[in-house]
Image (cartoon, rainbow, N blue to C red):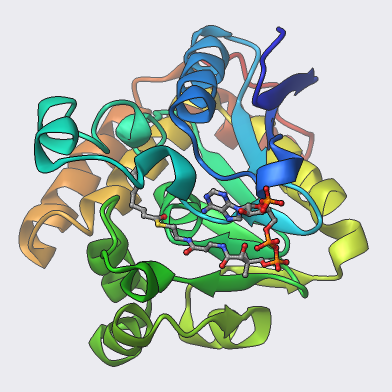
Length: 258
Ligand code: CO8
C-alpha cells in the first residue's frame, strides 16, 4: 500500500491512516484527499478490519485545505469540479467506525475532516479552529454545520467569525472531542480503542454507528423508530445469539460477524 501523501497501515483488525505531508503541516491537497479515499476504500473492503484510525503528526493533524493549491481558483474552477464533494465526503460516508486521533493543529479542512470521523480523541497539544475567515474565505467542508452541532451556535459562530483556536481542554468541555490524552499516548490509545471496537460484532458496530448518526438527520420520534428497527434486526444475527449465550455461560463471546 504505497501512497505519496499518507501512510496506510494495517494492525490486526485496525486500519491506520497517517496523513503525511510534514513540510506542509499535512495540508489537504487533492492528492492527499485522493490517497485517503483509496485507503478508506481498501479498509472498507477488507473484511478483517473492524475500525479505522485517522491521525497526523505531533505538530499537525492537518492545517487545512492546501492554500497554495486553491489560492488561484476561479469560481468556475471551484464550481465545475464541485470543490469539496470531489473526495472529501468519502470519510463521512464510511460505514465502518472511524476514530480521529488529533495532535497539534486541526484547522479549517483539518478540523472538518476530524469532525467527519465518528469521534475525536485529542492529545493535550491539540488545537482546533476554523480560520478560513482570516484568509478571506469560509469553511467549505461542513465546518459551519458540523461544528455548530458539536459545540452549539455561540461557540461555533465565534470560532468561524474570528478564527480563534480552541485548545484540547476547551474542546473536551465543549463536546467536540470524546477524551483528551497525553500526546505521547495518543496513537496507542486510539489503536487500543479501535481494537476494542473491532473486537465487537462488526455488522452490529456498523448498525450502531448508523443509528447514532441518524440522530443528526431526523426528529427524535423518527430516530427512535429507526433505532428500534435496527435493534430488532440484531436478533437476526448469529452474533447476538453468541453474545447473549456467552454472557449467560460466563465466557467471552466469539463473534463471527454474521
Ligand atoms: N496550506 C498550504 N500550506 C500550508 C498550510 C495550508 N493550509 N498550512 C501550513 N502550510 C505550510 C506553510 O506554508 C509552510 O510552508 P513553507 O515552509 O513552504 O513556507 C509550512 O506549512 C509550515 O507552516 P508555518 O511556517 O506557517 O508553521 P507555523 O508553525 O509558523 O504555523 C499554522 C502553523 C498556525 C498552522 C500556520 O501554518 C497556518 O496558519 N496555516 C494555515 C491555517 C489555515 O488558514 N487553514 C485553513 C485553510 S482554508 C481551508 O481549510 C478551507 C477548507 C474548506 C474545504 C477545503 C476543500 C478542499
